[in-house]
Amino acid sequence: MKSSATKSKGQMSFISPDLIDQLNPKHELVILANIIPWDTLEEELAGFYHEKMGRPAKPIRLMVGLMILKQMEDLSDEKVVEAWVANPYMQFLCGATQFQWQFPCVSSDLTHFRNRIGEEGIKKILAVSIALHGKEALEKEVTIDTTVQEKNITFPTDAKLHRRIAEKCRKIAAAGEIDLRRSYTRTIKKLMKAQRFASHPRNRKKAKKAQKELKTIAGRLLRELNRKLPKETQELYQSTLELFERVLAQERNSKNKIYSLHEPDVYCMSKGKEHKKYEFGAKASIVTTKNSGIIVGAQSFSENIYDGHTLDTVLNQVKELRGERPEIGICDRGYRGRSKVGDTRIMIPKSPLKRATAYEKQKARKRFRRRAGIEPIIGHLKSDYRLGRNYLKGIAGDAINLMMAAAAFNFKKLLRQLIYFFVSILQHIFQSRIGFFRRPDHPSLLSFSI
Image 1 (tube, rainbow, N blue to C red):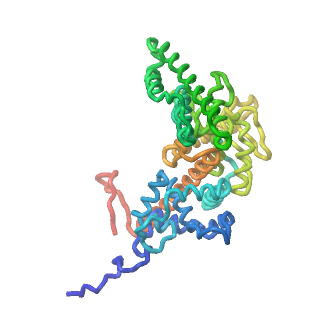
Image 2: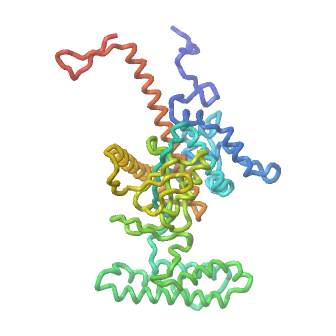
């Protein structure tokens, strides 16, 4: 009988303190940890830190790894930190050499890290995800399309905005120890109930009257606050009070309307969808390679500009990320009016010329059919990589969330390619050692001979 201390050669050791000795080397996160150039990322992002001032920062690899995991696994800041403690593969990706039992950081550290590196730092992470694909990311033809990155706000109505103004006025008054003549708490609650089923013919008149009264109450509280606030406190809340005044002054046909008090930069877009007529967020332009489907450009815009006017900015970003501009950009008919941007030809579906040959028609048809491949990529970005609803604040949050979603998509795509490559090698080895032949009685079945 063998001693208990005797170990087989293929047995995994749980005594070794090294984390890598206890992990499956074929796991996708282990593969990803080994192919990302962490040294390059640390050198690029080290410039956002001061060498002497402040307390020691968290390791850059830890924070970048958590951000990548957050987007790849569709997790919030809180959930990704909790999952990191329970998952040794996540810890290995973030640079841990031994299994950790404590949280790597608090969730707010991710917010501070995003604010520290900003759009420029996130752009470097996206550039790394593109460079890992090698020559496939340098295709001469790209497909371009725009979508809406919706913000995490409720559907805006005048009644909701006026109620929020009244609530915030009460909070400001409480913070400044100001006694309001009346709080209207119960009245506002009744008026909001009157807004239910406002489109029904029986409720329309009552809802319209309640909405008008809500606006009156909000304006009354705002004017009282302006009268009673001390000068020092009023300067502190100056931008907030001006925002309230803009909301109360805007009408149905006003331009540059405010749709959310905590996200005033949100604007309304209509993309012609049957199921969702209006969307509230920021316009996002996506650029992918035509054949391989790698995202080589992801640009967010602070204004709802025409699709054709987004081409200059997003193509400049593509050149910055991968080092060269594409020769051909394939777009849909929403980009009409642009035939060339710099050195890039813009191709849009249109009726062929009479002198066009059958080969030219077939080539154009295949090219525009391939352009439709960007639509499912945008769908995956929204459903799997946190682009469907953006929880990050402000215009900078729009750009950061978009580029991190694109980087996570590229990383995941590279992992699938590597796993498929390894499986194909194993199949080739298996087929070379084992002969295959079909059974004569059942041609659809395979028999094996070693």
